[in-house]
Amino acid sequence: MKMPSVQKLHNIICFDKYEKEKLMGLFSIQKDDSVFVIDVENLIENEIIIKLKDKSCHSIMLNDKTNAYSLFLLIKDIKDGKRRFISLENLSSNVIQIITETILF
Image (cartoon, rainbow, N blue to C red):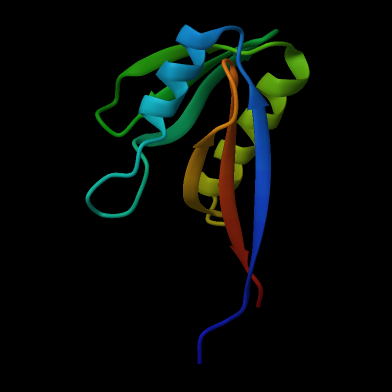
């Protein structure tokens, strides 16, 4: 029996359009329906250092500390298996929406 799921929308405001495009590329869906992001290496003010499956790290500048922390928590929940990445929407010049789901037990 399939468990019900609850979708959640996460609006993330990046520092500028360039940072938004970097983040969108890192959250693109891979062939195995996963994302390339696997962890957060560090969180410094409004900057988040993201670790990828290939073990490289990339910096993303967010609009403020709150957005950086929100993205940190989201990546942690995906890594810990609490959430599953569904899709990504381009909302405006520096805003993206990450859609995830939680499986209810």
